[in-house]
Length: 194
Image (cartoon, rainbow, N blue to C red; front, side, top):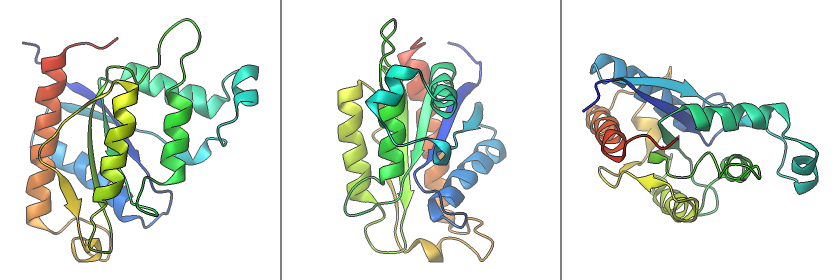
C-alpha cells in the first residue's frame, strides 16, 4: 500500500468572506496538519467562474474553468463543503460542477471516478443535510465515489465557531478528523483514477 500523501481538492460552496463553510474548509485543512494526516490540500476559487454557457465552452475553456478542471485532474480526491440554499446545493457550486464535469471530446470528465467527501455548516437546524444529499445524487451521475461515514451536518454553526471563525466545537473537530481519515483510506482503496 502506498504511503504517498493524498492530494485533496477542497471546494467551499459559499463565496462569502465570513462563510461558515469556508471556515469549516479552513478548519479541515488545519485538522489534517494537526492530526498528521497524509493529505496535501489545494483549494479552488469557484467565484471566478462565468455562468455555464455552451457557447462559451464551444469557444474554448475560459481560463478560470481550465484552472478548475486541471485541479480536478491533478488531485486524487475532493472535499466539498457546502451550504444549503432552498433545500439544495448553492448555484455557485452547481455551476462549478457543470463546468468541471464536461468531457472535452478526447477524455472523459476530470471528475469521473474521483473519491469525495462532503460536509457542511448552517446557522439553522438542517446542518445542510438536504444539500449534501443532493450533491451525492449529482455525484452518482458523475460516477464519483462518496465516503459515506461519518456524515457531518454542523447545525447552529454560529455556535461551533468563535468570533474569528475558528472551529471551537470539539465534537465537530473530531468528526472532521474522522472524515478526512476515511477519505484518505477510501482514496487509497480505490487507487489511481487518472
